[in-house]
Structures are given as C-alpha cells and as structure tokens.
Image 1 (cartoon, rainbow, N blue to C red):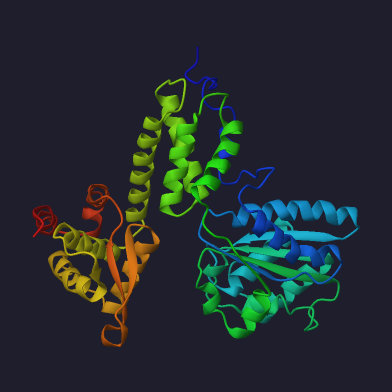
Image 2: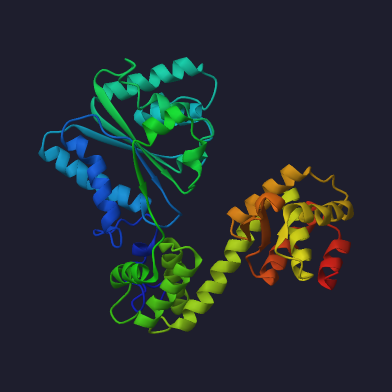
Length: 405
C-alpha cells in the first residue's frame, strides 16, 4: 500500500470550504442581493450599466455575491440577446491607475501581445485601453476587487465617463468597486464619488445564526454524512461572529478542524478539534503577520509588548513613542518620527495584532487613539524570537521584556 490514500472518513469535497468556491445559493444576504439586482437592472434593459460601490469587512460576502449575480446576469443577458462581457481585476498589488490600466489591457490582449509593466506615456496607455474596450463592444462590467489599494483615483473617474467623453463608441462600460475599507469612499475626490458611487451597497457583518447556516450549507457538501455535529458548527460560527462576523474565518476554522480530525484518524470532527485548529490558525496568522513586518515594525511591536507586560495598555501613541525610542536605542537603530511610528501602529492594527480604539475627550482632551495587544503575547514572543537576529534586536531588549520592567 502506498504512502498516500484517498480520505474516505472525513472529507468528501474539501475544496467546498475554500475561498474560491462559489455556492449555488447565497445565504444570509437576501436584502443585499435584492439591492444588487436592482443596481444591475439597467444591463438587462440595454442601458448604460450603473457604477456600483460595495463596502464592508472582509469575509461578509461582497465578492461571493458579485460572482453569483454576474454569473446569473450573463445567463439572462444571453437570453435577451444582450452582449455582456465581465472583467475582474484584483487591485491588491496595484497602487496606481497606470498599473491598473496596464493590467486591464493585458487581460484583454493575447498572451503574445502583452505590455511591459512600465515605460509608456500615460496618454498612450489610456488610448490602448479605450481601443481594447471598444473592440469588445456591447456592455462591459469591470470589477475592481480591493479597489482601495489604488492610491490615485483617475481611472475610477475616466472609465465611467469614457463614453460621454468620446473615448468609446461601441461599448458601454460600468464599474463595480469592492472595498474592505469603510473610509475609502471619503478619500475619493467628489467627482469620482459621484460616478463610482452611483449605487452604494454596504455589507454588514454576519451574525452567529447566519454563519451557522453558511457553515452547515458548506459542511453538508464538504464532509461525509454525520461527520460534523451541530456543536462543531456552532463553535466555528461563534468564533467567526465574535471576531468580525467573518464567514471566511469560520470556514477556515472548520476546514482546519477537519484536517486535525484526519491527522488523528478520527471518525468525526469534534469541538476539541476546533480548539486545536483555532490555536494552529492563530499561531500561523501571527507568525505570518510578524514575519511581514519591517525592522521598524518589529521594534514598535517590541515596545508595545513591553508596555503590555507592565500593565500600561491601552496607551496613546505618544506614550508608545517614548518606549519605542528606548527599544531603538538598545537595538542601535535610529527611531522614526512620531507620525511614521504611528503608521506602524496602524499596520499592526490592520493585521489584527493590535486593537485601536478611538477616544474623544471633548474640547479639553480632543480625539485620539489608544492601542493595546489583541493577540496572545506568548505567541507574539514566539514569532518575534524568529526575527531577532534578522532585525538586530539585542538580547538586552529581550531580557528586559522577559523581566517585565
């Protein structure tokens, strides 16, 4: 018998739990789907598509609903002889309108006719983009996932107005922008807000009941019968609801719990497997997050860890700065100015390593943020220990942290 054998006890179709799986039915988003359908209605009428902006935290169904409805829309458009093309671009690694335009052109061109990432005048790139879009004809919907990564918003203004400005004759183009950043809309210029945010849809966090329904739907397909009891579903849903109402987190937890059950040759997934899976995922998240920090990010985190061990958190950024400068001195590294140090605190908050709470003391105290650890300190120390040599943090700092000075 070989080393590898098909799993016949736990997983039936493990991929059903993955992020890229598209369910046949969307659960817990009836109201949002109805609003979304209304926003897409002009396409079936043969009219210029509306520009739609979706926002909400990660894992609340924005991308899943978009994939689902665009698939349905394409089928219905064909029935009514509507020529519809959809293009999806993830902007995670794209920071400028120039980069977005290059990627769109390359997605529309043959593999042997691709543009280089740089080296062309902006005007020329725009002209190539209009040529490619107009050669398609009919109605085109471009989905910009993680649109908030684009630092300049010129393309978000130009594409919706391309037909009105005479850049397109044969095509009617609409944009769907998807963002996890609730404040991204506020950062857009007023002219872009009026075009990109023609129709706005907010996706709230899932509650525990909705997460249970989503998990049960997937579990029935992903696992063999009677492998995942109700208590496991409830526990995975509870963790997701507590953290952020994030279906992705709950599904990852359920999949990891299944993996633990497989490793232990169990007949069922148990709540104990969920606990083990949660610890494993938390450790991986922290290690990956800490590994991705810069040298200065590590030093800011060390400073906050010290303050946590001393019981000095939650704490304002200006007070973190004092300890951070001590850490930099011990590490023989020049400290950053307060504004740049705050940027690193913000990155730690974005990674979920640190929590950031806004305080408002009125006219006397003003508004400010307080920071504190939102992660198991032991796991953070374990992750940081692997970076000590790389960032040049001295043993003296580690000793001071251990002693909780």
